[in-house]
Image (cartoon, rainbow, N blue to C red):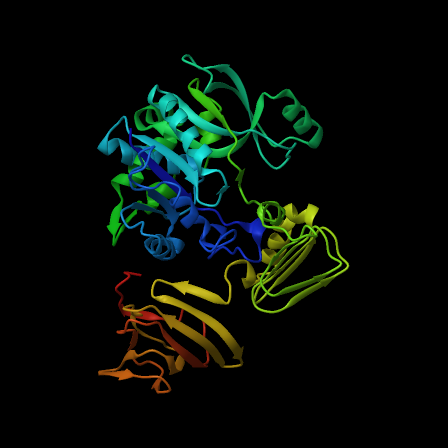
Length: 473
C-alpha cells in the first residue's frame, strides 16, 4: 500500500536561537549534516522502495515557501503537493487539510504525518515501524509512534501502552497520553516499561481521521474544508483560504483527537530519534572529540570538556570550561550552561519585548531569487551583498526614498533602469536614481554577486513598489 508522507514545516525553533530565527527556522538549517533538516526528512521516503511512498505533501507557512521549494529541488524532490497556511494553527488543522486532500484521491489512502525538524539515526528501524503502523492504520486505527525511552527525559510527553491489538504484539492500544513529567515521575515511567516518548509522528487512513474529526473536532474539520474550498493555486503551491483558515481553532492533533478517540494505537520503536529541541540535544547527537566536546566551525578548546561550541563567522576560543554551550553567528553570541539551554526561549522572549530584530532574521535574508546580506549601515546609507541565482530575476520595482548603486563582482547582470536595458560584467557598475523603475536579472549559468549601496532618507525593506514579479509577491 502506498503511503503519502505529510511533512509539517511550521515551527520557529526558538530554543535553537541564535542560529534558528523566525524567518529561517531550524528545519531549513543544516544542523547535523550538510543537508537541512527538511531535506533529511524528505530523503527518508524514497520512491520505488519498500514501503511504498508517494510524492510528499508539504505544509508550511508562506514565508518559507520559496526556500523549501529550492531545498527540495536540490535533492531531486520535485513532484510534491505544497500547502501554504496563511497563519499557524497547530497540527490538528494541518492534519485535517491533509486528510481532505488525500480523500479526494482515495478515502482509504494512508498518510504519515512527520515534523520536518526531527533526527532519525536508524532508518531501517523507522521504515520497519512504518510497515507495522500501516497495517494498523489500514485496519482503522490512528497510529502514533512511541520512542522506547533510554533515559527519564522530562522534556517529552509520554504514551502509556495498553493491550496488544488483535493479531499480534506489534501494535498496542493507547492507554493514556501524559504531559511532560517531573524527574521522579519520568523515572517511574521508564522503570515500568509501559511508557514511550511521544514522537509526534502519526499515521492514519484518510477516511478514519475525517470520521474522528467529524465526531471530536467538527469545528476544525469545517474550517479546514472551507479553507480548501477557498484555496487558490499559486505557482507550484496551494494557498489555503485566509479567512476560513484564520477562523479555525488552534489545536494539536493529540488534544483534538488522539487523547479522545477510541481508535488510538501506538507502535513502540527504537530508531535513534531526537526532536533536536535544544542545543543539548544537538550536543547529544553530534560527533564528539576525546574530551566529549562537539565543535563546529573555527574553534579552539583548551581544558574544555562536555561542551558544544559552534562558530559560523569567526574564531571562537574557549578555556577551562565544562558542560557549556557557545554558539556564534554574525550578529549574536549565546553562552549558557548545557543543562539550562531549554531556557533559551526566555532570552528570545526578552529580545522580543525589547523589539530586537535578531529574533526574526539573520543578516543574510533569503528571497526566491537568492539572498542579500547586510555589510554596513549608518545614517542615510546601507551596504549589502546581493547573490542572484542563475536564471533568476528580481521584480521590476521602484523606491520612493532611496537611490542605489550596484557593482558587479561576479557573473553577468542584465539591468533595467527606466527604459534602458543593458548587460554589466565584473567590475562594472550602474546608478539607480530615486523613483526610477529598475530590475536586476542573472541571465547566465553562474551565480551573480553584486555590492549594493543604498542612500536616502529611509532604507526599510517596505519601501518597494513592484510592477512585475515572476514570483507573484
